[in-house]
Length: 272
Image 1 (cartoon, rainbow, N blue to C red):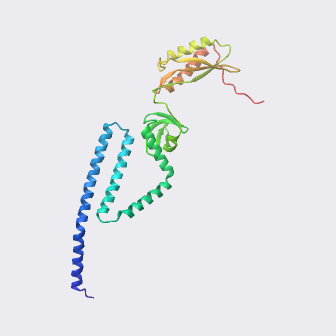
Image 2: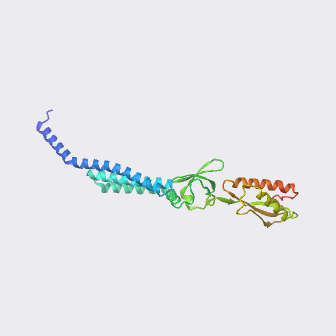
Image 3: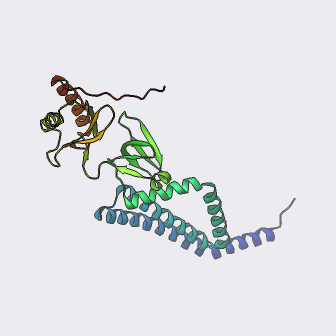
């Protein structure tokens, strides 16, 4: 089989013509791509410096910076292929349809994403705070986009979805820096209430972990069929709260027993 010399020559000339005609588009597209990549890097560094200077939340800063970078990368890609002569309208339509399909299939994740944004923006709590929400209590270890990571008192890790977390009640024990304990003690009716109050207040005043201001209080809260209920309310810092509760209960039990005051136990009503 012989190949015509004229055919090869015509094919070569056509190929060279196409390359020469297409070269300006290719070169300009490559130039735009290189400039765009370096520009995105510069913009990312500038945005990070501005956020650090404005003291943005670290989680929010990283998230916003990542979104901005990906948006710029998508725009750069569309500009690049458009410069090469590729029709972008169909590409954008396919991208939109794909985004809609992904969004419908990830409704729960999008809810958690929106919840994470609300938490990061409005800051009902921050890393290091002790919170109670969705039936769990722990210290916030990390606020991610979809979940919040809590560390419980017994060192268990709990991941709470941000969607449920942002739509529910949140108790933040760290905002004020101090907490009041509400401890209940029951004593017999024949006990001298004034003496009981003096003993308990003395215990609280001698405990260095109990704050002097606000001052601790001891008040009668209820008169049951079998006992007088007293509410013991000492104030403590968040770090000392647990020890104050434990030490107060222990010391009150010991001191009242030594003074001959009967501590009325909780009586369950028995069925007849």
